[in-house]
Image (cartoon, rainbow, N blue to C red; front, top):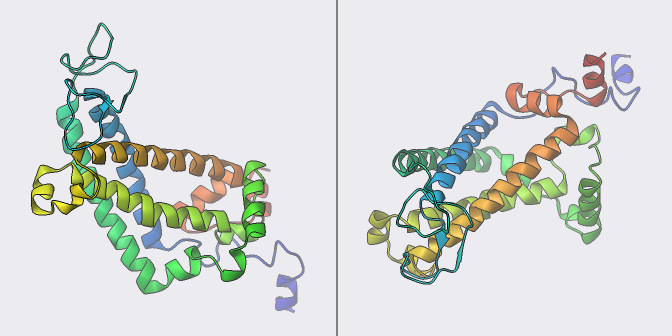
Length: 257
């Protein structure tokens, strides 16, 4: 009789807020550490760019060489020509130090998450899409749902949809490794030990330019990620990533009454 009560309605058939955690403790901890590191990297990265908002391609680049492009912003260094009649405060010193520290914490956290995902089956069960889902029809439906800001169903509170899985895989295994690689390629110490790391990218200035664009893609991912959390139910999704528990829409709606 207890079992029949559980399946009497679609909402009751789903896990309640006190059911099995939506996210494991390690996933939640690594998520928030990565979030803090990413914010630190964005702030410090912006300060580093302000010190020299000119980008080049190849091995060398300075104020006396042609630019690939330049950002229309003032610089924090008087020697960098920007067209502005003033110079911003120079925050390059602490920015580079914090950028370096935050980057290594993010790298180590990412390695821990990757080892956990591979060893526990988290990658296979929660991120790799099923073969039946890898169709143009399924992909186009997910795209349309996101463009319409359609609120996910109850079941999707406990799993990632196709577009989420593909996006997370692209970020984890393409963008993150590329931003790390290009970052290391700008380090003289690393380049002296592994010169091929910068040679394959076309030079240190090429690495810096690629690093900038990859960072922009990661920033775009973050903004879209936050917007979709708000659409799907901010309180419910935040609760799932903080406590591990995710309730149904019905339970969430009851909290507002």
